[in-house]
Image 1: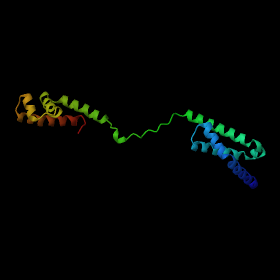
Image 2: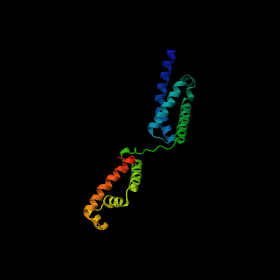
Image 3: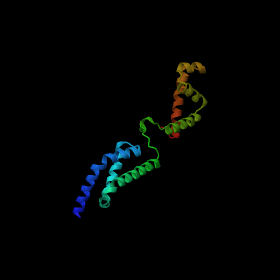
Image 4: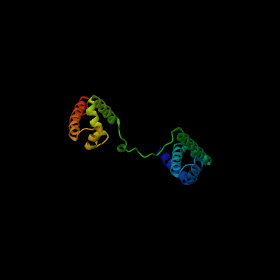
Length: 172
């Protein structure tokens, strides 16, 4: 048994030395693949030769055609495997910090709309002028035709009522 293993190892070293270069060029040419992929297929070819070394030693004249046939079959199998899978793309990973989840904002906006609808029209109008349209107290007073103090007072009470309504709707 040990003698057979030594003979197999010696036989495989001789095969490798004699056929590695030409087999590698053949696989690259037939497969149209890079040297690393071709080297993998050549290694698999020699692994199969090692498994069948007893048979190959007996038919010394037919070793090269056997190696070429095995290599060609491996190239075909590799090509079929590549074609059976979807094409691999190399995309950059999505930056999780760049993607915002707007679901919470939508819920808050809906709650704010319901809370605003509960306010009196006068309070709602003051809040819209001051906080939605971003007008100053003076501009709001002029556009509504009321004194500055009234705008300030209505804003104070409108904000207090809005906070209560938002709390009822679950926004703190």
